[in-house]
Every structure is written in C-alpha cells, then in structure tokens.
Image (tube, rainbow, N blue to C red; front, side, top):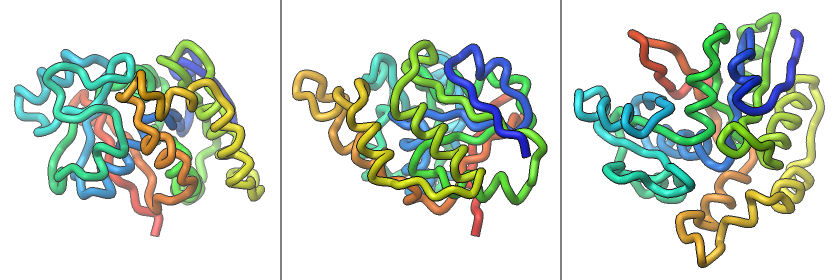
Length: 230
C-alpha cells in the first residue's frame, strides 16, 4: 500500500486512490458526534446556499456548519461537536457545509473512495481502509479554509500515516503539539464564543470513536455514512 501525503485545497483536487480528507477543527469531529447521536447520513456540500436549498427540497432535515467559525443564518447548528453532543438528530439526514472539510471532499473528484478524517476517527479509519487493501491511500490535511496549513490537521495526517505503517504514536505528544498551534488558541477565547473550549477538547479525544466516516457520491450528491469496523 502506497501512502501519499498532501495539504490544502490544491492537493485535495489532485488526490487519487482512497482519499482521507482531514478536518480536525471541526468538520469531521462534528460529523462523528452527529453519527454517534444516531444521525442517518450527512450530505456534504461546499456552500451555505447549497445546503439551505437542499433542505428546502427535502433532501435533509437539518443544516449544520460554519462560515468564519460561526453558524450561518438559517442553519440549525454550528460546526460544533459540543453543540451536536446535545442535539436530537436520531434517524435524521443532516446537511453540512464548512470552509475546509466539506470543501475538500467536494474538490476530491479524482478519488476512488473518500473518508472524512479527524483524530477521534483515526484508528477506525485506518482499520476500515486496511480491510479494503487499496494500492494507494492519499491523506490530505485541509488546514484553515483549505489555504493555510494548521498544526491539528498536519499532526492528524502524520498520526494516520504512522498507524498505516504499524507504529504506535503517543497520544499525549500529539495533543501537546496540537495545543501549541495557532488554531487551538481560538478555543475558549471569551472574545470568540463561537469557538468553544469544549470543541477543542472533544476534537483531541484521539481514537475515541469506533467507526469511520465513508463518503460516496449518490445521484450527484456527496453522502457520508457511519462505517462500522467491528
């Protein structure tokens, strides 16, 4: 199995094989929480207007996501794992739009299969992909809005690669590196209440989720589903 590493939107566009699109803060941590709460599926879109239009058409019942870290007007939830941890989404189809994770998934048009990646899902994602034994895996760290590298996504990419190579990375070391990064400083800042400290803490519960998030294109729409590895 060949492992390739990439970053940002440009590499998402070029990614091939089985592709993992990483968004730790917060898209694919939030999605993991939604699935843990019983969500049926999550439709992934790049733009806010597209999410609202799909809800109006009855494709999904709930919109969640963010622009500049904030819940867009008309959305039911922000891009917050802490907020979703108390949401009643059992059996529902959610529609998610963020500025990095869902944009990266939409851009990965050369991928054979796509997985949503975050630290909480890391080991489960690797186990799911190993079962399929693809020739090529491309790991893409989306960073800030797909334009600037961030510590949490880059560290998650390295963590995933180490797992694929049979290594045992140290959770506390990964957390320390992420917490020292610029993006982590936003969380818990009273001047930016939309970045809850709980979101950061939940995103750093490494390997806490026992399933992967597999994304397929269905009738022209990108659909994420909980993918069990047990």
